[in-house]
Length: 111
Image 1: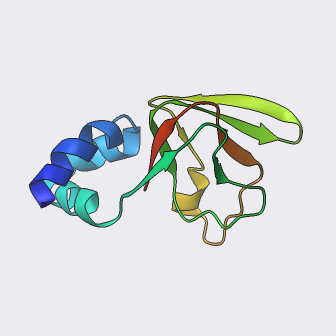
Image 2: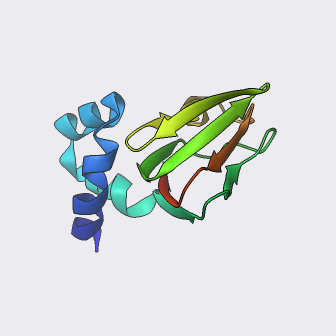
């Protein structure tokens, strides 16, 4: 299972510079990462991935679909291969500052 998770998730994770660098240093660690901490989320159109003041536990990467992030009344597009909430990786207790909603059926992974 670990090898399958690596083959599925590493191409997605490696779009982020930090994870790309981690793989270049230690592929064994990358395999462990892919098989233990990644969560998958399927969102229907208008599905809410997170809301303002929710505890941010993971950075999210859009695998397919499209989402909109609303922060203080301004909307930002979050498309396939883009990530959001990276602060969750670095700041304990980070709270989301806006709401992320799918504009069409979308798949997201959490790291």
